[in-house]
Length: 300
Image 1: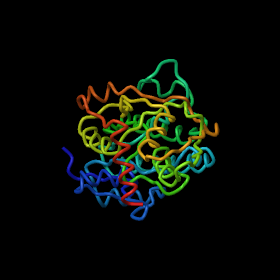
Image 2: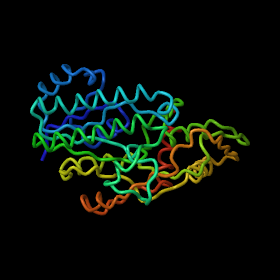
Image 3: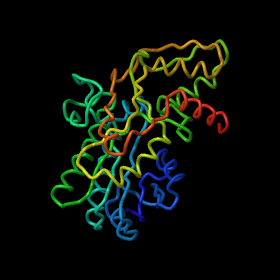
Image 4: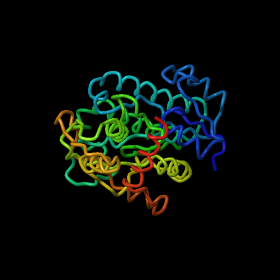
């Protein structure tokens, strides 16, 4: 349906992976356009005139950076998201598919896995408060532009991402790449310190699965629902860390420091996704971890 597709955040983790299956789409990064600049955003959209935009751009980081730089995460994401949606409308672009995050859902809910309808039933976790609210604002803006201007602007909410090509290099990495780097650098007999208690539960979404799903959402997701994209598996941090240690073949002790534990669980129900695109077969964490660990060893 859509041939001229523009992807923001084209140099990011998801953008680079999406390019491998959709090389004919146009990918932009901050080097091509400062999306925090309203005029520059409008001129780019007007010049390129895409039939659709997949909006992936934003400021992201691990739990430590998210917690310590709340003002930066809020401002940068609010400005970028506001400009992308508003200037897409001004440039006459009728289709925008934007990425939210399950971090935008409430910190605590009565029932799990939560549903799309639960997104406003409480504040996001304190460690992701500004990022979560910025993503909620993107969801609200997309829906009010849909309603007032008759535009097909919709959103999806992926769970925690990991896979080859992720950021493994610094403390701002997400959990799985940071875990792989720490385990691979540790010596036999070492103790590896990790954030939190190890008890928190997470749905880890393999990157190849998400980039296969995005084009399906672009074609088929035409509603105001923040479709949850998450696998069925919901594993504890400790379970995932122990799997990584086993993969390394080393005798490593894991020490959880109890700091920045984050929310205990944030697993989402993927029923609406499967109703929309069919019974998608998600990559198991064991299989995805093996591929990601091997990629890191080959590319570090």
